Length: 390
Image 1 (cartoon, rainbow, N blue to C red):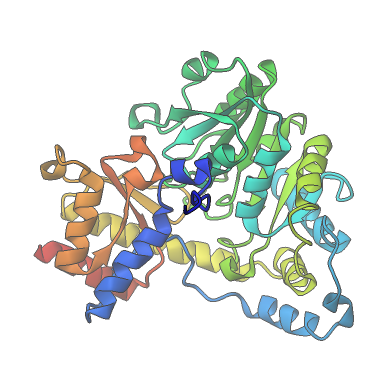
Image 2 (cartoon, rainbow, N blue to C red):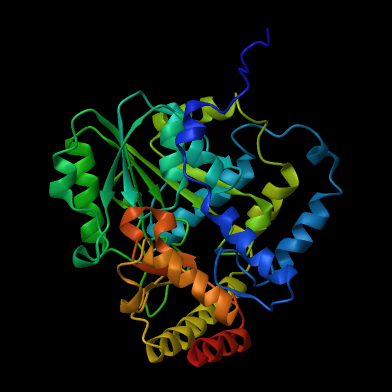
């Protein structure tokens, strides 16, 4: 008699939806295989080159024998000092590099590890949102309460809704400037969220990845401006310096929380490669002219794409930060099983233009699509012409 097959996915894996971006990649790859010229506004991966001074730094670092050995788990002191200097210049926040900053393999790794560092209870997760907030909570065994980000509330958390779910909540995720909605908040609005978390004994996990991609004079705040107690801020060099392939970021804030995440990391990986950290040191401490130039390029692309989408009947708010446009699906798609997916598939099939369906970021993202500003102005013009024709 054959034995029962016990090789099967874990319960958590069976509960997770398919990872959105891999599905988008497959859709585009299938069209390209058939000869279609696809203009992709899908995945938020910067197309601008990594600045030369950063490339030179990593080349030099590759010749240093000290970088051939295992790195430290928490990261090089010089890298953590560079992060500390960035916060002092940017937000007038003082961070102790020895205990309040740790390096991470991009933001995604630390987002995942932070969930495993927390006691069991409820995780308050926004919807729509970067999907890793939800998946990390499920992998770590937390009960997830998803709170809606709605247009009528400027895509900000509804604190009265959260108040009713605060019992047994152990941590809460927010992300501004926001992916996918491109929404922003004021320092006063952020202060209210910090106060809510502290009043209810909830750790605040704040993803500030897009803080340096801001326009029209807007300067995103940091929750650490209200003190470090109960707060972890997550950051990455991927967007600001076009370093997504380097996989380098950090976690900073409350030293007790930083140490908890570090304890998880020590059991998961062996730290960020030394040559990558040296590149990060140069990015943070070196000339910032390219970062400013790139922000200006994204702003021009935003204006070009936003104007063209508006003429095509796609309604969207003008974002003050991120490199995304969050557009409403045309009315004729409302009523379909998934308006956002139907629109994205039609746009790809008929125009060879790829956007990301809002439903992929959660059920409250339905009815919207996200366009990433990761194409040149020439390609944006071509995409808009194709959209106009259909």
